[in-house]
Image 1 (cartoon, rainbow, N blue to C red):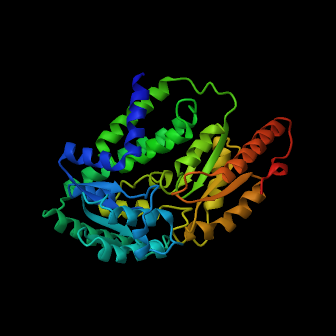
Image 2: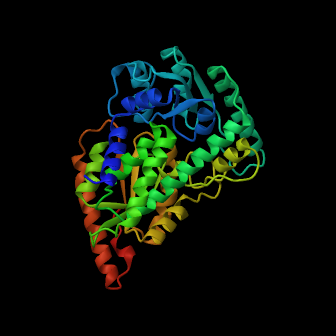
Length: 395
């Protein structure tokens, strides 16, 4: 096994065994850990306080105990987080940050206090209208509040120097991740859809300098290699909350789908916006969040997600869009009718699938996926003959 494959295997194992990965990072760095619920938690503040930020994105199992705190119609990611916390999976955490972007997150922030009282929780309220003139000042104040909470938890202050170092560290990491997604699309023979997902997911459980170094090494090796030997990959843009469970990832690989680009909350949305170089660190952090566009969790009067997806399809040469809808994720569900019309008008094929993180099998989705891939292959062939793409939409 050559070095890139070893490094890829290491990151994939890190993603498959999050608890072990976090414990290893804590032992190696001597840091305590703070859990970070989706989405957009200020990881730089956690890092500057001397903690390891740990992403909390659920998992395949949900125990009945979670039903004491969350209804069955809540998002499976939140139910899994609550279930794992009640079962002691997160006992190594010194605290938890929970943004309140949706009703379920608001419930979790309060129920956590009753269900897991041994781990302090710090709810965060982000401005929804990112275009408001007051949003930046408000968000900076919110970051200051969380900074003070983390300082109390750490038992020491956060210096401006440590903040600058953390901000630069995370900007470097996000830059390497952006580069990786572009390189991965050119090497689907080495970076399958499942491998791509796990490499990006391992970010949430590792110490960032180590993760950045390993991923940058993979990038450098990919640059040296020629593009994929697969002359006819089916390239798609993926959008939604996350690309899970493994049953879905296995399906993508079985159908030889190449992810040309993604608009996933767990993946590119966290690193697609580059931070500003002007102002204080807290101002730059606020600006990076407020510059986010096309996100269903944020209020945007002229919704730009559809335009963003269409542009990604055209820039990458993708054949269509795969819409991965997490069941009961209301912000994502409410957004779909808007960008669906725009995809229709642009003549871009798409497949809408609904799933839960706890699914172990997905035969019905598999059949639809196979049909979608066949449509995309036929579309590509027809376009080569000058046919109209809109004639091959899969409703």
